[in-house]
Image (cartoon, rainbow, N blue to C red; front, side, top):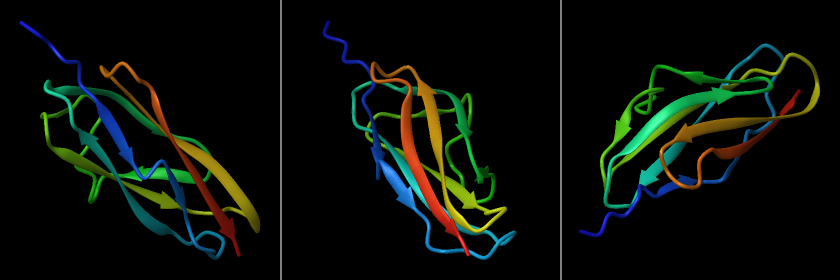
Amino acid sequence: MLVINPLASLNPTSLSFSAQKEQHQRREDHQIDEYGDTVLNLGTLSTTGNFAIVASGTTCESGGTVQAGVYCEISVDFTPTAEGRRTGTLKITDNALSSPQEVILSGTGD
């Protein structure tokens, strides 16, 4: 019996938020596709910088699963605390061989 490990694909691999006033939020969605033949078991979803995962609109969750051939979405908010360019990451751990996957996040505080 041939077993193919889960294959996670991040779409896109980076998110760039448009300029946002300090202390105001802007939301973008990010998609995780499971295009392997087995279930993708999600571990931890986390962000760094002035970015946060938002429960509302997020269908991926820490400890959740993504069935083969299906996708889930992560909603991320950017809330700059000062003017200027800000960067961070969205990190996803799972049972795919490419784990952890990271999405580069960037935005500008206005």
